[in-house]
Amino acid sequence: MSVVTRFAPSPTGFLHIGGARTALFNWLFTRHHGGAFCLRIEDTDRARSTEEATAAILDGLEWLGLGWDGEVVHQFSRAPRHAEVAHQLLAEGKAYRCYCTPEELTAMREAARTEGRPMRYDGRWRDRDPAEAPMGVDPVIRIKMPREGETAIRDLVQGEVRVPNDQLDDMILLRADGTPTYMLSVVVDDHDMAITHVIRGDDHLTNAFRQLQVFAAMDWPIPEFAHIPLIHGPDGAKLSKRHGALGVDSYREMGYLPEALRNYLLRLGWGHGDDEIIDTEQAVRWFDLDGVGKSAARFDFAKLDNLNKHYVQRAEDERLVALVLQRLTADGAAAPGETALARLRAGMAGLKQRATTLSDLTESARMYTAPRPIECDEKAAKLLDDAARSRLAGLATALEKIKSWDEDAIEAGIRTHAEAADIKLGQLAQPLRAALTGRAVSPGIFEVMAVLGREECLARINDVQAAGP
Image (cartoon, rainbow, N blue to C red; front, side):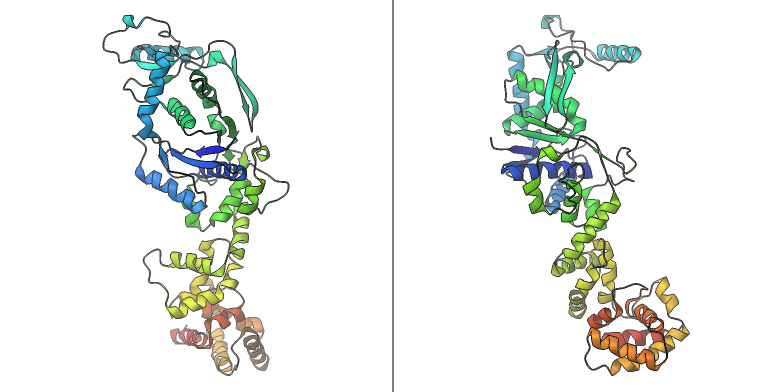
């Protein structure tokens, strides 16, 4: 059997982190088994579905590297097909028209509330003659659910799960206005798209028992189900924005790399021994549903940061340069000139070793791309007192005499000057770092000076002198 999976988000908001993990698990399972990964936009809620949300979902999946196979299916466009199935079930006596009035439904709801039980339709029109229908009531079409026994699902994650059939009331397939319900649309689309495995969050498990009845009534093959536990916050509570329940676009803006987020989401609820760092190629080879746990995973920003740091350090310098340039010019700022760009390229190997996110990397990269005079932050400004400026003035003369402008020669020249002037190296290096980078922390100062070049270093020191106290 060729595996066919689907990711089916509703375009009513961003692609949240739980949805991204569901998409990843579907994608990995499909690629592992050499099948097809389909994308279906479930846009039947016309009041809340937007083109902007659809575009954000597609963009998020593409950024994550989760490409789909074939054309995107838009569920709303298939409404006539969904209605056709409902009418087929009606013609075969497996569904019926229900003429319940709003008042009757309200009475059922109130009775259920009074008795402390869930609201279930009581089936009063299941076997009733339509000739008795009240005037002015447009009927809905309901499926005839089994009333005895139980329904069982052999879930590939949850194991065997059962529910008594008397808990499944006759659900609506077509509303009074002729539009199909979500429960019907999902089943028809899964059948017509030849979906073999439905992999989704376990909040859909109760839906599966109802959807199973439509498959059975139509005598269609039933796909395998795999319901994945949800993601919780580090405190075990339902995931919220304070925990990290953000859109994928937010993680992108915060400076996380897609491969790091893929790796992190993979490990949220799936495991392969003690392995933590798993690249995508390895994940495709290893991933299967037997590695998915039954307990809720816990989101942890610290772990995500550690993974992202790993991937930033191993990313190609030129790729990071391009990503940093995007951020430097995102607010309409002018792109760095050729000289500054050359410095950025030369300094990237050192910069990335100290960065956790692209945001960190971009901020530290400004020391190579910012125009003179360099703006100092508060900590750096405090290092540039009168004594420091005096020491830097003497150092400038020594820097002009260094013959070969490389890290070793620069370090040797500065150490020689410090010894001759009876100054501790730290008393010289700290204000020098502040003057050259505008910060109190940076990559090794000799590395920075080699990247900046002699002329730029001397010019920045002169800027500090000219600015005065």
